[in-house]
Length: 345
Image (cartoon, rainbow, N blue to C red; front, side):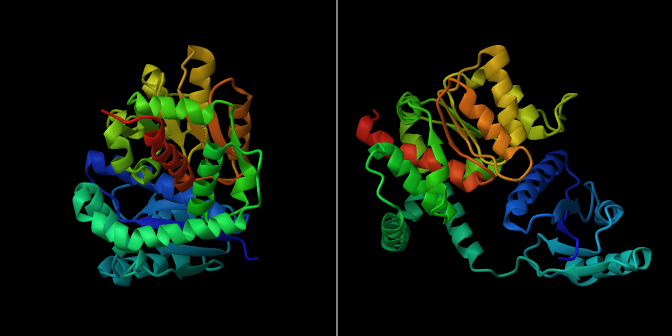
């Protein structure tokens, strides 16, 4: 395989809040994309304007690593002037600088049908009553059919507690991967501790916004459980302290005592899980449950092994698999189980 690099290209933002959002989004997109690609492919995020690295800086980084094929993936909805004029001109200039490198531009996000469903979910999140008929009429039947398929694919696990099995089914459904069932691990009191926290209205914290967005507020709201991304509680423009290499790690440490008794769902960043475990070890912070499912080939598996060494309730998926969808699915499955245990006032 030709040594290949991917540049995920966003527009960028000049505003302080927007710049932080762009940085966080790129980190999430890049880390989420890596496990989907062949091993050895390098992925880097870049902005067309206002944020760093720029497209030119990203290409320079990849070419310095002797990469001979660079695919630019525009994270744009439409093929406007940026895609039809500005990016081709920039790449033409870069081709002169790096004549031995092949540049390819992927399609813009465009009118993929996925975005219709995404828009529907955004509407339902803003006004849940507007989406119930659709969910019941179409989504429910699709979900029911999907879960029936999951049931047919999973091998019998007679010794598995019923509630843990319910979580596993949701993980398999979210990941589209039956192998996840073999990799899911629970501490002895994980499900009961998580459900107890839910019935008490404990907060739910996530490492990144993608995990937060995946948690169903319609399930959380009746219990009074707030769902917050750690990054949103950091000061705008806040940077990692010395020794911390990501903002997600800094965001987790910033939560400190707020994590006591909370559910913490980590679906992206191994560094966030390591930072959380430092709080557990050094400051005796005790979350009610850690859903530790960072994804990727760099430190993800190691962070989950460290989690399983702690005497603290956890749900995890061993190895490199994981991701925001799986972490959110685990939390949602507990939120679905909780009403059977407790009727909120």
